[in-house]
Image (cartoon, rainbow, N blue to C red; front, side, top):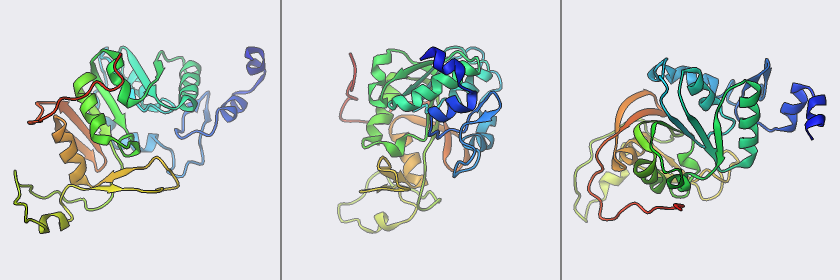
Length: 252
């Protein structure tokens, strides 16, 4: 197998590992030049990269749902120390390992679900949770697990949004007879996708902006920056009152 790969051009090796969702640049070759979102995720990164320090000074980073490793590599380029990327899809991890090796970047990759993060037994200085939440059947559980087990200081979070961009006031409590508040476009909402969205059967819940922010607060995160509609830099704060503990899902 190794000899066969040695005989293949970079273009051939990239094609053999396709299809790619991240448009990476490997030895000058783009992995997904015809991406339907353009030069993705580089075009997305440009809109919020200023909120990440240029020098991460050896900080530990966990990239959850790392895909082909675009963001993990960017963290290493900013002088991050230990960088760990996890993904539940072995196809993406093969791409990530190949891209990191070809670019000479040292990143640790593991086949792991977000529900299994307790197995890491480690809190990281910075956690990346980009474009994952709406693919989960249990989104709030995932946020609770991140808070409980892996977010040591900050988290860079991105989630697709639909619905109203406005965020309205929410009372501490509502009477059982209340109906109208739920009809407000600016009330926190999660839209449930029963079948598919964008031909993807893993798109389950799509929140509006108010819904994203409410879920983050409910899980104990403080919003520090919102450089674009979908992206947030949050810090680990105090969890609000809960009448149940976070389960150690996937813990050994």
